[in-house]
Image (cartoon, rainbow, N blue to C red; front, side):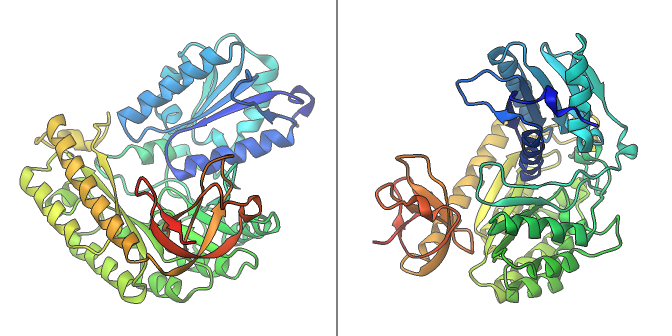
Length: 442
């Protein structure tokens, strides 16, 4: 039993780094602490509790996590500092030795974060404690469906990964693939709808692998969620190409609420590199999936993850990737320079790409991405579209997204408070001043 009296009136600050899944989990932690009487501290207030959800996908991410911990400790003297997430799972002892950290929780313990926090907060030991299970013993699933301060809800449908790509530490940080039941996820979506949620993003580590725990299928989950009244939009955050079935594509194309918006990791357009990465597909399969999506949803927004400079990516392999992507009808590239991770099998691959070459390759792909996104947006100028607007900071432009994820801007003079979380039909105008959105045509 948690003694909520110890938390009444306490102020908390939250910091999240990494994927949408991390943001979803953190907003849920905030909601649970709020139910105990904890309030979110303003920027100019000192907090009693600091909660940091970390990422470990790159060494840069880990460095940012350490910097965030040091900053929160410095800015909130005497606060009880809790660190969880992937970095906490992989390096618990190191994190626990950072000055000011009180409690470190791994991936298995995250599901009971509030319980662990309650016990430690009351006893307040002078030496930091850490609790983590070995990867093979990570079995719990921490439910999460929350929006935090956003308009969209993020529903966690799966956790962990069984793929063990040679460059990746996520299976070690998150454990093996696991999921809740379809019925429990439908119940969470129904609750979000009752709270006024109109759009839900499905999150996870490898969500197409949904069903390992329950014997169900991801497409069955999609069909069940599509039937939830009140939810008008769903987006699928990221889906491995080998798990993106034609059945799923065809269902989403005619579904009531699943949007024409896909995020599909490619990582490399070279079959040589894909084999070195131990990916589960080749470039032909990827191209076939893109072609099938565009066949049934011509105006679908397709984002693609690409990793540059991984071990084994010779100049010839990179050129293959560039030409492959240049010829694909995709909308945006999410470009990540390869970061060597201790303990990964990629370290045994002999060919190493210099940092200079990584930067040059990243720059070329980002320029290609900008060209593709700009061309996609340009095709929609003058068309009518329904936009789900999000609350704007006072005096700033209001933004929202169309069904196919085009970012739309409404000037401060035209923005209305009542537009927040509302679907508004508009005519798409020209690009805004920095080219990141289309303005609403007057």
